[in-house]
Image (cartoon, rainbow, N blue to C red):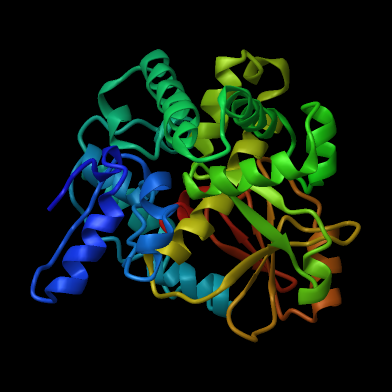
Length: 348
């Protein structure tokens, strides 16, 4: 077992030599740089990559308070992918879980969306969490990315600016040309930086729901691995207080939903894809399992008009649509639209 393998420039070649010479030696290479461990041609064909995702809300509660069996997750998945309403009130089951915790805070989910995802946040205040995560991001951009061929101090600075750009903008598709113009760069450099930033696992992209041929010509939507990274970068620039709380939380919550779907796919055997709807009057997401009809999903904090979800249901011939919103405390179905409260969705 070799930890911090990335500090040896020849770690993958050494592993290859041992692998080729003796099949009875089991090797584990680990390190703090996901980028350097994965961005290597010699090891690509031999690697079994196991993604270590940020904490889910349920995992966060287990570690911070006490262990409990999350027998809610499957009911939520059945609701999302099959439209099956649970036979029992999940809100009551969640309240029972909360009642078993000592010193549980009523705003725990909001704090998780703003600062959670990593165990280091348990014993830190907001200021310490921001500093820890900003330092981590700067290390990834300057040190980890800096060791990749073709990346220098100027491009590392551009990568940092790109992350702040994503943190401050409203969720939505944006072309690489627009990013290049905003950062006074070029599309080739932006494309390289986006590829590397995704390999660092700081961000990921969501593609438009369209034919494979058209998908390569349309812009992607970019989200952070956790909503907390978006919030922390915004707070570091002092931007979070410049808009109404509900509007700001809606942005964070959309990232929370996107990263929940992205990380679920990486950590489980649920096979599906998440897309964004590129049509006018679009919904936030479309999730599709195999060749099933896509399920339109709209995300909001506060009251949400149902015209967008209805338009998407008609366009994609979906039997039902889902609005994830805090306007209800329990799961409610009305006119083939399922209203799913954030407190319940967070246990997915």
